[in-house]
Length: 142
Image 1 (cartoon, one colour):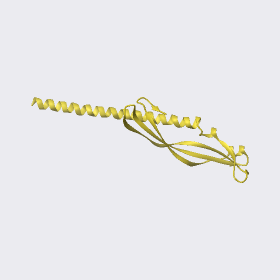
Image 2: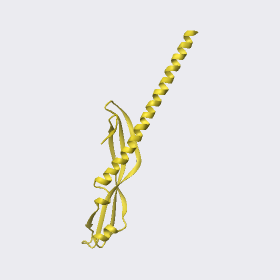
Image 3: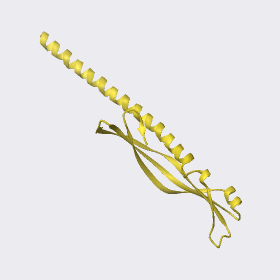
Image 4: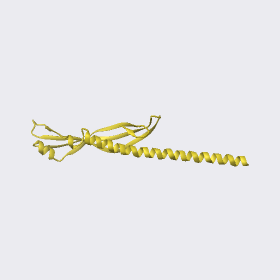
């Protein structure tokens, strides 16, 4: 009888240990997910501010019809609510993160370059982008 009680206590201890360990992994993964969301916001901000995207990269070109109109154009990145992380079996890269976003092309027209730049911009979807990043155990890496 004493042996069966000990057996039950040992089994219960293993079950509780397994639950606590699983909970620890879930919390770790939730923290890694939060880090990836913050990383994504920073990455998209960096692309829009320092890359070839955003109003700062606007270009003005003569339009169709022999240049009677001017077209002001720029591309912008828009965040999509689509990101995911996946566990790997690699100790150096325990997770990878997949980020999806859209590139929109915005344009306005005018009789002069200045009028085109000040015009009402209309944007249309140009492309969908998927980027994959790795987590090195401490942070997400570009």
